[in-house]
Amino acid sequence: MAIDLEATYKDLHRHPELSFAETRTSGIVADMLTALGLEVVTGIGRTGVLGVLRNGVGPTVLLRADMDALPVREETGLDYASEDCGVDPDGDEVPVMHACGHDVHVTCLLGAAERLLAERAQWSGTVVFLFQPAEELGAGALAMIADGLYDRVPKPDVVLGQHVAPAPAGIVGVHAGPAFAATDDLLVTLHGEGGHGSRPEATIDPVVMAAATVMRLQTIVSREVAGGETAVVSVGTIHSGTKANVIPSEATLGINIRTYDTAVRDRVVAAIRRIVAAEATASGATRMPEVEPAGSFPVLHNDATATERTAAAFVAAFGADRVIDPGRVTGSEDVGALATAAGAPIVYWLLGGEDPSRFVTGLANGTTDADIPSNHSPHFAPRIHPTLEVGVEALVVAAREWLG
Ligand SMILES: [Zn+2]
Ligand SMILES: [Zn+2]
View 1 (spheres, rainbow, N blue to C red):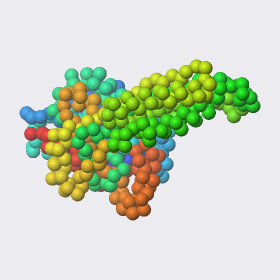
View 2: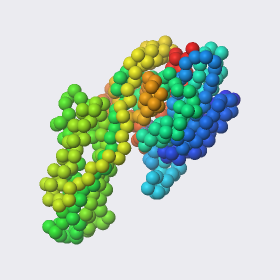
View 3: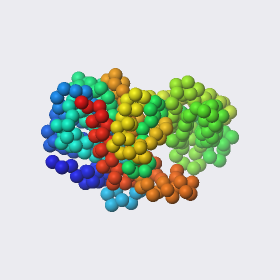
View 4: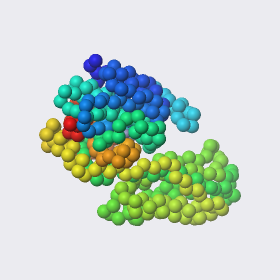
């Protein structure tokens, strides 16, 4: 079987699936792995799939791809754009898009499975191909581990994987140490006193309270985090009210935090709690707000020695000009849990997916951040070539570096 990378990618892109609903995707993956003749495990961590390629004595390498998509309405205008919908955890029908590029990861890992099988006379050991659900919830890796992942496949000596990113296609980027941020989500409920829109004097307006809180939260990073440290605080959701002439009684804020250091994280969370309570007091609230944790990912820490070894293999394969250190990124990833549970090092790199000429223009005009859509944007549209070929090659090169 020869896997048609472009056709596979376009098919996956056209039919994205939300976290833990990746049934069509995992079916395609399982069929392809079975056709290659690998040992296949399905339904692990709900929709996860494993393929195992045993090839004699030697190290075990785990290669990971995540499979889920996002509740985003695609606006790329591509002829293979998604028009599919899914059902979100609240039971609402929502548009779905591969806005994080996990379809690239799945396609490249299938391509790598085919390549490593074809080249098996040149290496020895075991490769575990892991297709993970629900990365976007930070739940899929843990679900696979809880479902007995390492009872079903050998524990790896190294965990390897990649994420497509808004960097020039043809480039791989790998950073030793804390490479992806820790993230914490907080759900804040602000309590006011509802009433008629014509009589604000008889109410405590939670909309104004929420607006003031959102603005004051912006001072945490600028005024409370040291210049040499990094943190991001974003308010991603704000919900209140049903009608223009009704002052509601409650408002909720969904806050997302990114940090690389536990002390910074603790300081940011404490500042959020303080500001939320103080703004409620300033509004005259009679009931204090609730601040509840709503999910978190730990820092993804690329092992220094393993990263150096893998990066050297990339330089040998691609040339030094195509291997960069992108520094720390503020995105987060749950792939580290697969390595932690195995007691193995992890090396997780960025795969460029953007038209290089757009960087030349963007850098010349100083408009790179505005011009080039990032992951999770409705305009995120990785270039198919050479992104897929380089993604396959990077997985094969990294795996072969570790195999016997
Ligand atoms: Zn994502
Ligand atoms: Zn992602």
